[in-house]
Length: 161
Image (cartoon, rainbow, N blue to C red; front, side, top):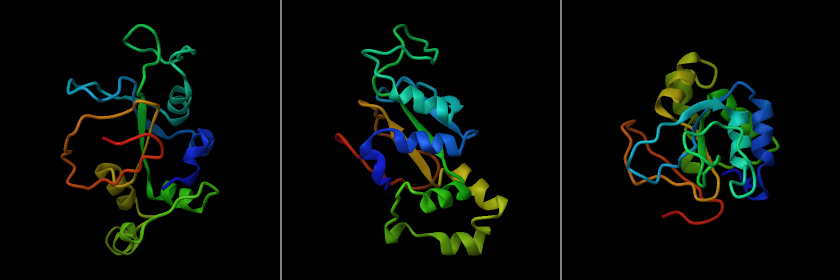
């Protein structure tokens, strides 16, 4: 749980400064519709700036396929490597893991967590730890993924339906 999330975008801007080469899956068209809208691969800093745009009053720097610039409900997800996760936990951006989400012991014994390349590959290919962040109105249609993993979500503000 990222505790500073309720205080605005500054915590996410800080992550973009820390990880300038990080690439996100950016969804400028939301995913509330079943008609597939593919994500754009973009740097974290670009996605953060795009999430901050108020589509009612600001122009987007992102080139959208639709007219009118930024849309309501934009969101991005950033897959975290073991190194990024550990850095996040040690940072001044307070995060908290519930005891049921502690999995370092088996990751260490099976995959060489956190330093082995196998651990990083496992995290990325299974989407083991993902940071999902969206603007007002972000959402996705109800679905199941083919990754054979589970997801835990936190709604900082608004409602989850």
